[in-house]
Length: 411
Image (cartoon, rainbow, N blue to C red; front, side, top):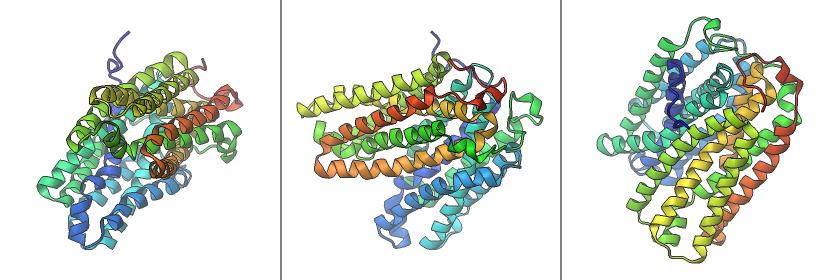
């Protein structure tokens, strides 16, 4: 079996991946510079943290609306325009004076990001050659994983060296590079990309296609699985401190290792989706995730424990957690058809952000009772998500028969 990284893919696919890396980095980059930002702007750290909350809410609420509003504009026009606005919203931060103005700028960046990521995922999924949809989606998803592994730490370091405003300039420059790569590598003619590619108009399809029971089940599964992961991830630090006496330095090393495992899990998931189909890939990823949570519960019962078994379980957790999204995305496209891919990916992204908010809240409730309950809550939520996804996987729709040859056959 070849390594998950062995398939290079077309150059334009990496333009989409860099776009995903950029917007995900920008989403979380504030966290690393929050104290200095709050001190300079004269607001509390809690108030400054609302920059992250507002960014996520704007994204979740506007991504589906953008997909429908821009339905008659070609993806090849939409993506560069959105990347341009995104880059400008970050590059202008050094000129911003005051927290209120910064909040407005962050809203603009979120509005642009809400266009970029769904279009990139839709384009990767619908333009993939037959039998390679999972790998193309997974490639774009590695941009999100890589942002956690590389983008956010790099932005934090830049902020420490050159000031928090330089962190946003870094995100803006990434946006310009992604813009240049998309403009120069995406083919100009529809025929160059199989299926409805970046050069074709975004077809929202009938709205009722997004209201089918199977689609709603996929959205519910997405929200629940993301909630399960974030319930654990958000409160990882207090959990590991109580479990193994993990210091901040050790935690940083564990996060890097987990991020690397997440990249591997994402890439491997794409191959599994293509070979065995989304349902089996999802079931395997979810089962491994729940097993990792069970292992953490068992370790909690015999705490304190050495760091090395915790590190191994965290690597498995991260790989499994990042292996779930490609399967859900492929299942979503399978249910709606390629012509409704853009609005479907937008709604799907919105459900993920809603799940993130739910997971953080439920994780906080679990920690308030006992930190050891966080993996229990995470496993239950992911299990519920899988329970919602499996009926959707068994449902057959007529939309599928109308898709182009670009989509892989049902297995």
